[in-house]
Length: 139
Image 1 (cartoon, rainbow, N blue to C red):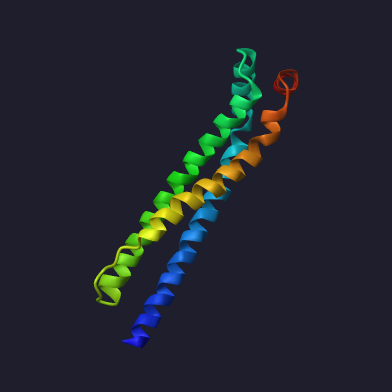
Image 2 (image 1 turned 30 degrees about the vertical axis):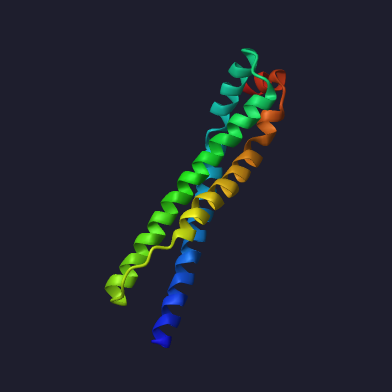
């Protein structure tokens, strides 16, 4: 029984690393998407600034957008992890399935923090430019 518990602990650690890898992969996809949509974001910022939106509002909206995306990606990663653990516990090791509530907190929270920070940093230089600089870059 001790060996079985040790194996289960090792599998749980492996699944945690899978969760981390999924979050990292999500960050890389996010950065690629941000770079691909940078021109469109620039056009949106020009329109919003022309209509009088302050830089602080634009900065917060970009940050909130990435926080929500990160939380959703962390939630999806947690679902994948929990399903993988369920299959391993019930099918491979023939044990009773257990619910890992702490990962349901860690996954979305870590995703929100990491992706929110990375997305904010990726768009930071675009948000800080003034309207004239943004318009010149579009022309």
